[in-house]
Image (cartoon, rainbow, N blue to C red; front, side, top):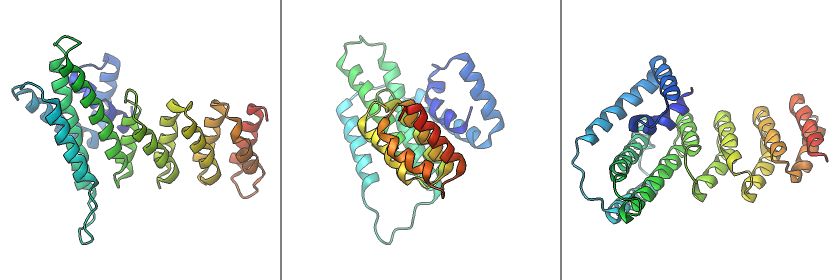
Length: 260
């Protein structure tokens, strides 16, 4: 299990919904990873503190207003003289968003004893989904590559990711400076291979990406999706004597498997 897997499963672990195998794998990783151990210890303290808070009647409208205000604060343009946020500050911001998500999860879990048709339960579930999406989007915008990688990992755990999340993954594929983050975004986008914008983004990236590992992952992507629109890009790569030889060979293999 990797660090990004730990981040994606923290809420489920704290809520007690993980299976035994996943829980044991998390414990083994955390025991040998100081960074993940510090992160889980902090969230475990937060979770226990939340359990001691009396549960008031849920006010979905007020929660939405607070969430919207927080998003506006995060999206507000920085003043020209403001110092650039340091990695620790960015981590704290992401951890704060995760804490909000955990709080919503706690409310949703306790509200689940209500009848399924209750409007409050439905509203809380919608809020929880939106909060999880916000956490993924926030992490993907961090300066730290490891945090962006966690954001991509979060996106793979979302049920019915929003268009904003898919757009963020496409933007990550196109522009992220870290090869590992771009590779992770390709894996995350495979869930949406039937979408025209995702398929087009993969073909466009084939024509612009220069990292061999990313190129090969994209070639595998278009072959898996049997996207024959990628044929022109594959031919160009296979004939480009400036490209990595392994990539050229893979492009020729892709053309063969697409039958073009």
